[in-house]
View 1 (cartoon, helix red, strand yellow):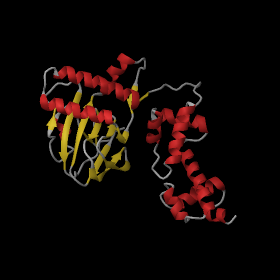
View 2: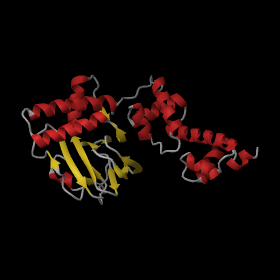
View 3: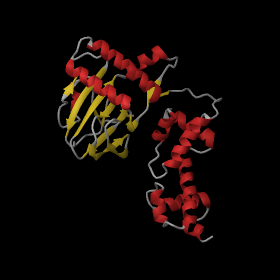
View 4: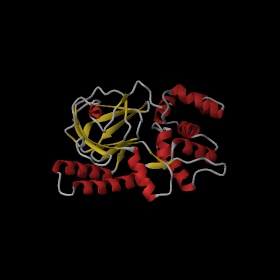
Length: 297
């Protein structure tokens, strides 16, 4: 739930510009694109307030920068490089805040949630859907669509609205296929994740044990809402996603301890634990002995 501490910005109006130090270089605020909004920004390092928006937002990076972005999404901090073609998908009303250290140019594509729902109703039998949060994803198609819509706004060619409508339809279809999840109504007959989905998530966990494996990240891989994914994952593994990640980290720590090439502190850091005592706590809880005692067995 959004709190009063976050700034509400509405990209359908001028107040959407207030989260950045400078006004947008380009905007379609005076042009009717049927619920789709485009802004093109060149912004210095900002003092950006935490904010939320009633529209879905796609932040499209159109050039590479040597300075990374620090993104705070729903209270979680993430650091990632700014590369040409990378995209941030920010669902409506999600709280976010970002900071960068050098001047940055980017496209903001925003649209009303009803626009996605309308396209969904025309193409599927699903009654409801939610857009998944995706950070630092390389998506050449969204990147090219953002550039094409920017060029259309700059040129204002013949048949502009028809062109924008066609691009909007293609964008909504792409988002529905790749970055959305059904809002399922759980039933008692559900018996877990599909085998290929479970394997995909488990492989990702094992390959990224050193990173912050959030529920949002894992649910996005499975293309499900967080609550639905968490329920099915536990049915499949008998563990919650967080418990499974901790178990995998402890199992990997046991392997590394046996190899004897790294200190306990180095192992803890390499496996995403905040400090050595964090590893020791979970190691003893799951194995019955501390890492040091495990080495002396």
